[in-house]
Amino acid sequence: MNNKQATRVPVVSSEGKPLMPTTCSRARKWIKSGKAVGKRSKIGVFYVQLLVEPSGHNIQKIVAGVDRGKCFTGISVQTKKATIVSIHACLPGFYKSKKTKKDRQSVTGKVSKRSELRKTRRGQRINRKVDFASRNHRQKRFSNRGKSKLSPSIKANREMELRILNNLSNLLPITEIRDEDCGGNSKKNGFGISPVTVGEKWFRQQASLIAPVVNVNYLDTGKYRNYLGLVKDKKDKSKQCPQTHANDAIALSSTSFVEYKQFMDVKSHGHKWQGEVKVTSAPFIVITRPKLFRRKLYEENYSKKGKLKRVGGTITPYGFRSGDRVLASKKSGSYIGWVGGYSEVNGVASVYDHNWKRLGQFRASKVKLLNRSSRLCVVC
Picture 1: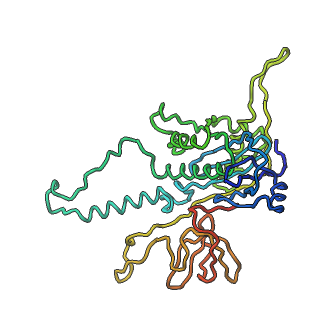
Picture 2: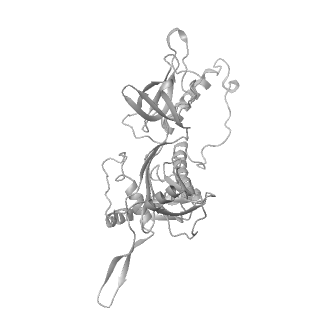
Picture 3: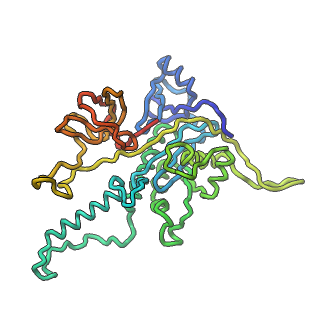
């Protein structure tokens, strides 16, 4: 079912209302003739904004598919005739790491370390010479045994997925969201079978404000993926390629257009595919979140002479903030990355790639600001 047609470009009106997408050739003609201007959204999707009145406001079926995972999520937008965009999102709650301990830069690692330091500070101010009833113990402010709120890591993951869907809905008139049912029934079992299923109900409630949400059985994803001729990489899901999660999201969104139905004729009976959908080439976007360290009151261990060093922070003395997208240059070449720190002694700023691996330290005069921080790192 793969069709090597040109991809579609999202279109919005002069007032910012999303319209039906158009072909690349027509978008180029509009820009060249002055009827539209090309722009790029915060999640890296290229679109055109019309400067004239559109020829029509009719809307066809546009479906978004969400293939949710523990560390990564695939999101795609599909129409009957073309695939518009596919996204690989690296979630901030549980970073994929080979370390045996929790990754300090993930949400789980930060919350665990914050709890550890808080217990240490609370223990320091307890006067153990007085009776237990007279000690300085803080009373509980609420019961944390009610299981009524999402954990910080799960909430951060779901909020990142919702932010991407909200951004896409501003560019495309999404009529439906197809969400994969991960197989865990929280009401029946009492608990979700994995961190993926926790917060699933909350996500669907929030996503229903964008468009109606339809649950798709996780057992059907592979069936539709094979029918469409899409490839799946099951060995390493951390690879930032369409074969890990984006293709599954395309298969989920395509379930709105094709279906494996039962039929019965005079001479035969059985099941066959009904409906039509075309999977075409589309922009593939990788989205991560910058791994920023907030300003800390003090370091965990004292350095020489009992002095406490500066730790963390998102502001630099050179006019940049952590997470800003910059163009940095040195003798070895030019690099596009994101600011992640600085050294005031050497007068340099640290620049990182979207996976938050340091590209190098650059003189502040050799760093040019491209975009202010949007709390996302986007690679098209």
